Length: 134
Image 1 (tube, rainbow, N blue to C red):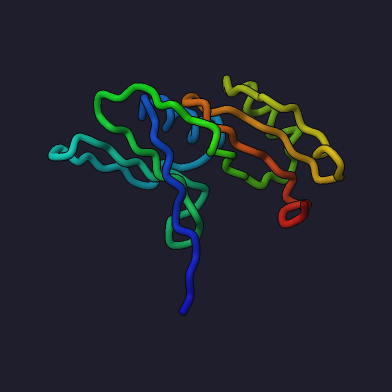
Image 2 (cartoon, rainbow, N blue to C red):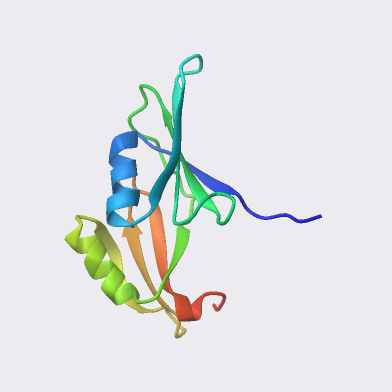
């Protein structure tokens, strides 16, 4: 029996702002979007490839809720990139916020950086050559 991770869900306070960030700043594609009028929420699925090929992110907008308390349990989403230095510069030029400049992880050689999305979620960038390493 085959299994794989399908998506990660994030609650967002402004769906259009979040879609803009993930598509225009991080280069993902809006794969699908749907409204549920009865229960007053909208879902948008974004990713670098179709859901049948890759794990994606589900953005959930609960109508009328503009922000969430992220608490201290959430860590981050990790994205592999061929060159995190160039990727960070592209993100910065697109208006994204780099919260940890690219460089080796403390106590190691894996090169990482961190970006913050409009709702305050952290996104780790990892040089693709180091994916799967600590």
